[in-house]
Length: 379
Image (cartoon, rainbow, N blue to C red):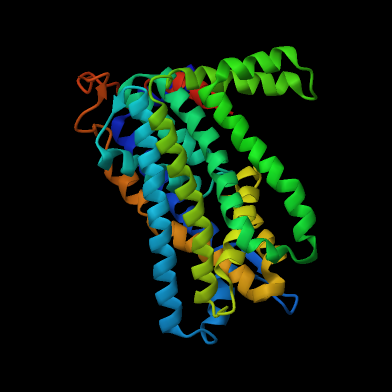
């Protein structure tokens, strides 16, 4: 790694600029290509690209209805993205780090843009961690904030699941009761367990050390990392509660967004709670999938399995694909921030425990080894 960095710095600055610009251009075009070329199965057995499927359905969709509900879907998702940005601001504040919200928003959008063509949430998590650690020079604290954010993200998914379940579980048909009997206690236990880790880490550590259970070694390591990260928020429990609520808003708005995309493709019989509940399951499947690009493929498959009987296979697939587009409408603006932030870019201020440390910030690329270690620590 050091050899590559030394060689890179030895290159002519103009050549480095050309290479960087070329890489950005290739990745930007690649992101759009992946969005348009993803293939889905149609009702008549054909396998066509998402773009082709959209073109085929245009004649069957009322343009006024389509754009009205796509706009609403995007607006709902924008609320969720804003909550996610605010959650990150809160968690950094709990670590004594403050930066302008406009800077955090731009970095967040860059991370989402990069994450468009990376597995799971690697792009967003990695870039946010890199950005905040680089400018604050507090890698340990930013890593702790990232660990807690990942935990709260899981809590948000399960809380959304439980909120939507009573009115939407009918989407599972004859399996509804048996699924509910299994999932409700499990989801409740996960949420309770995570809050215990966040607020009563000593109690959880005692349980792990004294009670035998399967997979103890692996769970112990994860809980230890989370407990250590949570310790930094011991005097900021209200921040954690607020951040947990923002996590719920993030995932609930994402799930609700798919209701509006279903309406956009003409599935007027779609029920809000049915689609929202099914989408919570789909979101969880997308998040844990490590092999797909931004969840492509998994999203459409899960949505079709859960909603095909209620709104039709094509509508299920189309609403899932359009949900991705509605979410990416704002995400793709991250390309603007990525291109516009030059090497000498600095946020207006960076406060660490009330002290502005923006003077003497590291040059672009410095501290990457520490940040990489921080990213690995969150896995």
